[in-house]
Length: 93
Image (cartoon, rainbow, N blue to C red; front, side):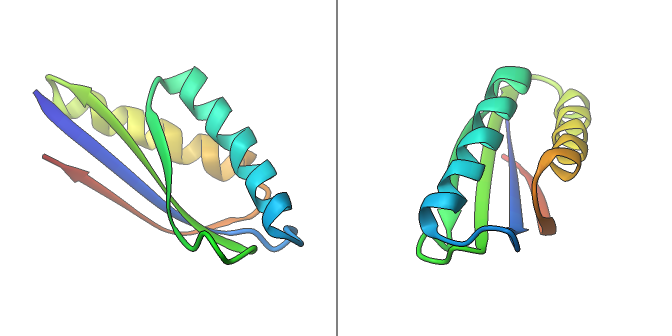
């Protein structure tokens, strides 16, 4: 069993408060959880209202399948987030 971890650091220029940021993240979280069946958490920058770091985790027996899934998630997030992805990392355990 392989555990795949994807982290995204995101800049949200149109977010004007922590409440606004969390609303935008909630929308993204629900979309990705439903569409790709991944666990989701905000990892860093909880007190900054225009920046966040989120993480997603999934399990599978094949690394190739997870690579494909993470690439789809990354493309989906770039297309649907009201901001810019600054950095991303993919790790396998």
